Image 1 (tube, helix red, strand yellow):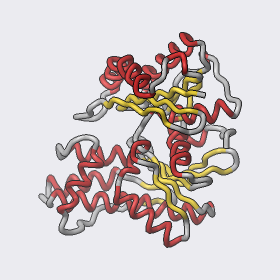
Image 2 (cartoon, helix red, strand yellow):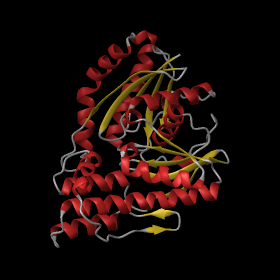
Image 3 (cartoon, rainbow, N blue to C red):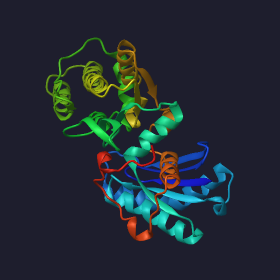
Image 4 (cartoon, rainbow, N blue to C red):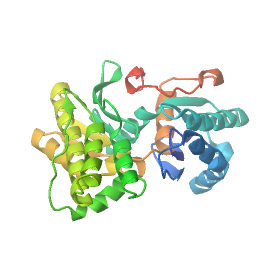
Amino acid sequence: MIIFGIESTAHTLGMGIMDSKGKCLTNTKRSFFVKKGIHPREAADHHADCIHELYDECLTSAKIQEKDIDLIAFSQGPGIMGCLKIGATFARTLSMKLNRPIIGINHCLAHISIGKLMTGAKDPLTVYVSGGNSQITAFAGGKYRIFGETLDIGIGNMIDKFARELDLGFPGGPQIDKVMKDAKRYIPLPYTVKGMDFSFSGVLTEALRQIKTHKKPIPDVTFSLAENAYSMITEVAERGLSHTGKKELLLTGGVAASKMLRNKLEIMCKERGADFFAVPIEFAMDNGAMIAWQGYLEHKAGRRQKIKDTKVDTKWRTDHVDVFWE
C-alpha cells in the first residue's frame, strides 16, 4: 500500500509518501518564513500558492505516479484554521479525483507514531515538544494520557519569540544553539514547574528584560533561557517515568532537534535505567511522512471516514483520541 500524507497545521506545508512496510519514499516540505510571528491568513496563502507545485515535486521525488496512491491522509487538527483548511481541501479533492479512501488524523499522535517507527521504541513515555505543543504523554487505558504539559505557550513558540525579539532568525532553535556557544555564565531566570506541568512565559519575559533593561550579554541570557526551559522539561519527564513505570522515553516534535535537550534527557534516562530514543531530525519537524504513517496505522486497524467527517478541528487534543491501533 502507498500512502500519501499532507501536513498543514501551521507554518510548514509538508507532503510525504510512505509504504505499508514503513519505508519513507519521500518527505518534502515548504515553510512560510515567519518574520514577526505566524500571520494565519498569510500562512494559509503560502500553502495555497505552493501546494500544487509541492505535490508534483513529491510524486517525482517518490518516483511514483498519482494513480499509485492507495490512501490519502491529512492533518485534521490541532492547528491554525486557515492552514488546516488548505490541506484538508486538497486531500478531499485528491480523494474524490482518484476515488481513494481519505482519513484525517491527529497531528500530535502522528509525531508519536513516526517516532516509534523510526526509533524502534515500543511503549515509551513521550516528550512531545514543538512550536504549539509541549506535552509529556504515554499510552494508558486506551488513550495517550497527558502526564504533564505547558500551562501557557509551547516551548518552541517561546524559543521562536525570544529569537524574533532579538532578530536572530527563524526558526529560533538552531539560532539560539549558535548564540549560546559564546556564553560565559548562567544568569538566574524563572524556573516554573507546578506539579507535573510547566510554564514558559515567565522565563521568556525575564530573559528579554535582562537583555533590554539590564543589558546582560545575549549569549549568557540565551544559555540561561535554554538551561531553565530544557531542565523543566527533563524534571517533569523524570516524574512521568516514575509515575507510569515506563522503561523507555521518546523525544519527538520540532524541538527534539535540540542537542542540549537530548543530552539532558539521555543523562536522566541513563541514571534511571530507561532507554532513550530521539526521532531523527528529518522526522522531528512537522512533515507529511508522519501524517501518512499515522493514516496507514488507523486505516489498517479499520478506521474509515466519509468526506462529511473530515471537518478540521483546531483544538483536537491528544488525549481526546481513542487509540485502537496499538
